[in-house]
Image (cartoon, rainbow, N blue to C red):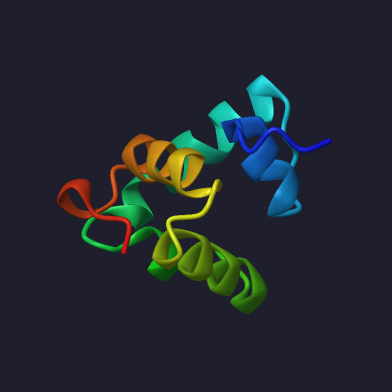
Length: 83
């Protein structure tokens, strides 16, 4: 049964990315500078399917919106924006 609460690790899994702590830390460190001044779905690291998932999850304020906001903040996306 799904609880509706997703973690950052769950989000990385959903995006098809390695989701262990070291891999997530490396991903964030590697892509942090490319994310500045972009909304999360518009960062150039995503495939079209990943960007679509992020855009839809955020727009629907779905269960994924919380870890998406956390990832947005960790990547240093535009000032507090995910949309």
